[in-house]
Every structure is written in structure tokens, then in C-alpha cells.
Amino acid sequence: MESPEVAEEIASDVFRVVWQKWSDEPRTDAAWLLTVARNLIGNAYRSRDRQRALQEKLRATAVLRFGDGSENLAVQDAMAGLREKDRDILQLAYWDGLGMAEIAGVLQCSESAAKVRLHRARAAFRKQMPAGADTITQRMGA
Image (cartoon, rainbow, N blue to C red; front, side, top):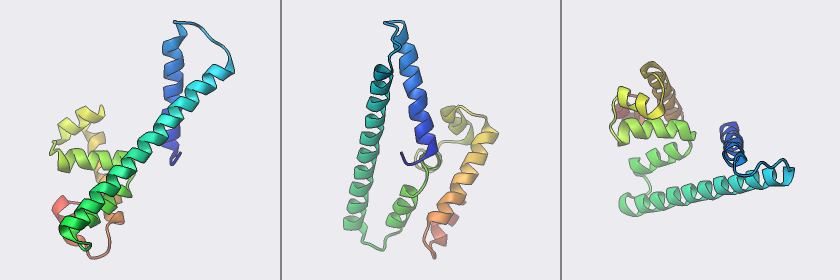
């Protein structure tokens, strides 16, 4: 997998599935556990591939609509280079237009934690943006 976070999430999903299915028929064989893990890893790869295909389609559409030098492409490329959790909080704040309390509710964290996460995501976004794209990051407050 691409990141330790994804690996941790899949591992926790394996244990969740085993725990949920345990009362149906307790199984202790390693083959069943490995089958559950293999299926969940396959799901994660398919999800990742669909996400990449969608990003490529959005980028191709933006190229056709706005041209290669568009600010939209710079933003899409920068967003694609972010970790999923950074991308998610930026989308909540700027695409969905949620306030800090709402973002905290969605992320199930405190408002102060949401503020810190948004600040870090903005910094990561700035690093991904090409040189000379200051106007975009200024509009974001990043």
C-alpha cells in the first residue's frame, strides 16, 4: 500500500470483520484470516485505481475545457499530490463550504484539532503548488 495509514486501516478492518463474523461461526484457522485480509486488500487496490481513474478523467476534462496552463489544473495536480486526509479536509472547507464546527463534526474531532488539521493541509497544499501560483493560495487563505 502507499502509506502506513492505509495499511493500518486495512489491518483494523480485518480485525473488525473477524470480530463481527466470530459469533456466526468461530474460526481459528489462518487460511480464513488470510482470505479476509486478501479480500480487503483487493478492495483497497480497486478503490485506489478508481480514484486515480477519476482524477485522470477530471484532469483531461480540465485540459480540454481550460487548456494546459489553467489554474484549475495546478489545483487538481496539487490536490492529487496530497495525502487523503489533507485532501478531505480541504474539500470540506473549500468545496463543501463547511465551517470549522461542521468540519469537526464530520471528522469526529474537536474544533481545535480540525483547525490544526486544516492549517497543516493548507501548508501541504502550498508545497504542492507550482511556483508562481501565489494568487490561488492567497484566495484559499493558505
